[in-house]
Image (tube, rainbow, N blue to C red):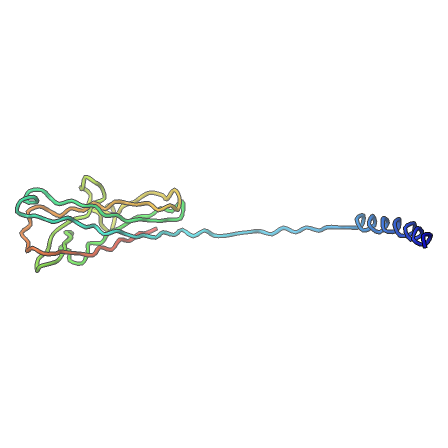
Length: 169
């Protein structure tokens, strides 16, 4: 039996080496390339927080001094997107003056683009706010500066309005 086993080793081992060598020597390859594409959309979203004024006292505190408060809008845009933000006049405006309604009267107020409260924030042209080109898709918070005008002769009670913020990109 030993001889047969030795004979098998003698015959099959060199034959296996030839088969392996032959398979490696005859291997061939071919290649192909293909394009990979995508289109990144220019998109923006906008959310807002309430602008809540504190108590308005037309007889003493706010007889000569307006009541100021701040709110905000948050915008998220695709990196590199340029946008503008508009704020409408609300539900009860009279001309370009925004008004909160309540108690049968209207409490006049305005919304501004900066802390100095000199540039009214509106819906077109120079009244739009341009937050600049988005440097990333990280949220950007933009302050809305509100002012209730001084010395308004209105009925006591709660007043409210609804503003629609629109982002155009």
